[in-house]
Image: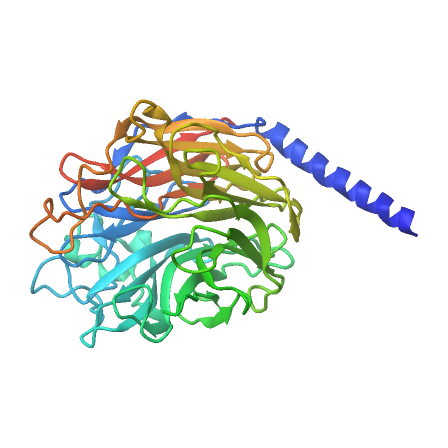
Length: 490
């Protein structure tokens, strides 16, 4: 009986390995793409950072959002109907009490002065973009909500004034996912500060799936060194929500950076980083949990990797901070989770990747390996997966500045074998100085605010044909949002 079980396990392992190899062979092993010319999406004087990107399955419709430091201090927004070659003039998702012009009401005035941490995804069930932002700054000063809306590009007026957000017909009035309180810091005044939310949607109709179900996961800062991971889901594009549902186990302390993903058989995964407290750079781990019933219930948290020397604080040779990002996606062919994170264990911060050894089993993981080993800093990894099994990872990469290790380029790493091998595409070859432009906390003083902040993340979305990206770079007048893509051969 034991020998029979071992034989079956061995045969299953061989089948899984063969499927991964076949998928890799079908799309070229370690894929590298052809980079397009970068497009300056915002091109203005105020800073833009922390991008999120949604893309339709055919790659033609794109929608991006970001923290925008203009007058209304909200979630900047734009869209493209031609695959990213051109973008509509920047506007704002309707989450704040102010438009970008003093005295002019926005299309859906809310009670909140500030919005940020945007997350965007395309929902194939409705053919709309689901857009979520964190909003805060009420008259009482301490309420905070995660707000959800939808954007319908077919009803948008690209020529509408910036205050009209491409017209009210394109949007759903914002709906609250969760409500908490904030004293203006991550500590939160009552343990309900939802932070760094991320979204995904179930795009499949097969058994085990909930086609069109929208998932949003976040960390809930408590103010006592604790920040559990929560999730909520919606089956009607954010009009109604189930949750919050607690994912992380009670024994955890400081959790953040929750990333939800859906596997090809319908399993929902959420990964995050865990540490002893909000300041510790010791004993940090990348954690993951899964749900087999569409996000309603969750299992026991598992450690995917130990982070030996997390990156945190100011980036070497720069005045802006970096963040210990843990990110993940699911290979849509093999069903295995590919997880990445930054680690300084060999000197400069490099991005490492690991994958679970068998689809659906989150208890056993491969030995982490550097995605692109190098002696210069790498940071802000973000991942997505294409239907054909290619996994894409975008990140800032200083290998283009080996002398000073200060200037940033943008690289895309792609794998067809769950991170065993990687191909590389350079999306931005001309390096930029992240300290050149500042973000601003006060309108009317766009350049001299004195705050160095590049954000905490950038973005990528994938189809079989391409990986589309958004990142923060230097425009002629300020910190702008840029877009470029890597195109892959059939």
